[in-house]
Length: 416
Image 1 (cartoon, rainbow, N blue to C red):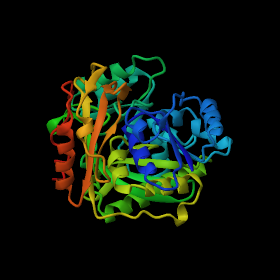
Image 2 (tube, rainbow, N blue to C red):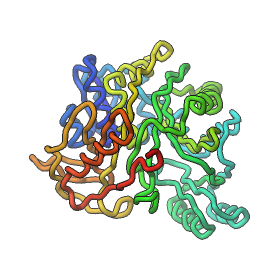
Image 3 (cartoon, helix red, strand yellow):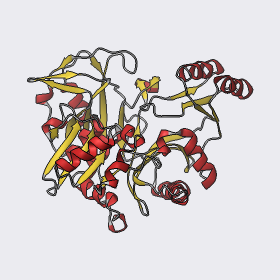
Image 4 (cartoon, rainbow, N blue to C red):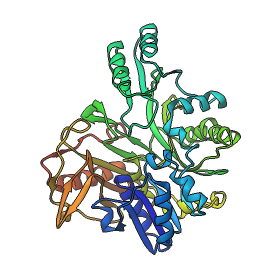
């Protein structure tokens, strides 16, 4: 098979790493890719938001399967263009991708399907949003209605913080926000493959959104993760499927927009009862790194089954293992940070089925690897226990010589 992965982050490197292990993979292209994907695939420059360009590229390179990594191409309708050309694609239609692209859309789905979630109100006017905060007080959660690369959420402990978050969101014309009650409990991520009819769980994880140790500092795209999530017991996972996933998929089908791709449910669990925080319509990052480390070569078979509508007969073969990853980010992220700094020591890091370093914001310049993003590398390992996976991942991180970077030292602390 010839396979095309769209994207340039750690998620896409992890997907490429897993797919490459499958003997069905003859040729693997990542567009645009990064310095890490170049080691396991061919990188190609391509505007991945242009459905016509992506479709033409796939046809020119005889691509048998397209895996869409990030959310922006999904919201832009790239999957629609590929499917119209009869190219098997993992990723929802533009209409179905609204589950991530619009918080208001998701809340309306929850209301229609009686899905447990936080109470909410949506606003397109800043003054009305401010008035709502004045009337309801804090704590309150402020969410950008559209795509925000994982950083559009403010958990406001005070009314002043909520007002500041609203002002920040409404600096752009056409902005909208959702204000939600703050849920309590433990967060976890639940991942499901869907083919329009069948839903197949493909793993759980917990990530660390805050920038600094002790879950302090601003929200980021994610500073580390581990899998599986201990809080998602078999009983709770079954409740997630029955109370959240299946009703969502049924409502999407009822509306004429069946969901085909990866559905990522961000959950809050309290006393075994799950509530939906939000949906993403693709793998998370850095959750993808630990999931792909655990799934390995079978990831391609599962992705292909979802893209071709064959999930009914598919199953996941889990080992009794644990995985953990640590994100190395540029100093200053998620705020301003320097680009172009050199990373050394990567050649000393093992690259095996149980430990590797996934690249995100990197570029190769000759034999030098340069940091060109905020989240730059993900040191990832798996083992029979979470403690051993933790120790291996941190040993990898310590091998990397990058003074301009930093990482949290407490990934996995809730489970350990």
